[in-house]
Image (cartoon, rainbow, N blue to C red):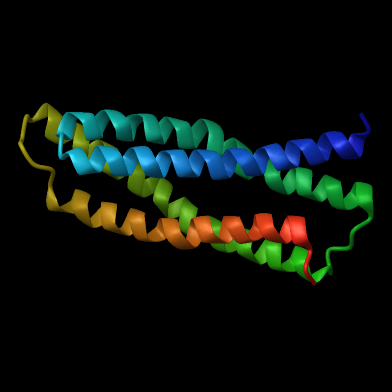
Length: 156
């Protein structure tokens, strides 16, 4: 296996982890939210925060490294339009993902506190955060999907 193939494999694997973990987290968080079971929401949100930290964060940090190595190994200039668009979209995805991490942590903490207090309902702040978290997922995930398409198609 050549260094280029190895780095490309790691880069594609990172994209899969970002998209897969993001999809899984969104699904499980949404399903937990729909139960209105405070203890279940608290447990799910706790796992979501851990999964985002272990999987998504590591992949997000490695993508620019493997992408830069691929540029070096293949002599692709950074001025390629598809690559510039990908980098811009990566920044957009980050602008939506970073706040989501903090929202998830706060939602987890609010749900944990509600479960400890044995309240039957989550506080209003939780629902504000959930709606924002849900809304931020569309541009963040959409930007990531467009990056994947640009990496494959290199349309311009």
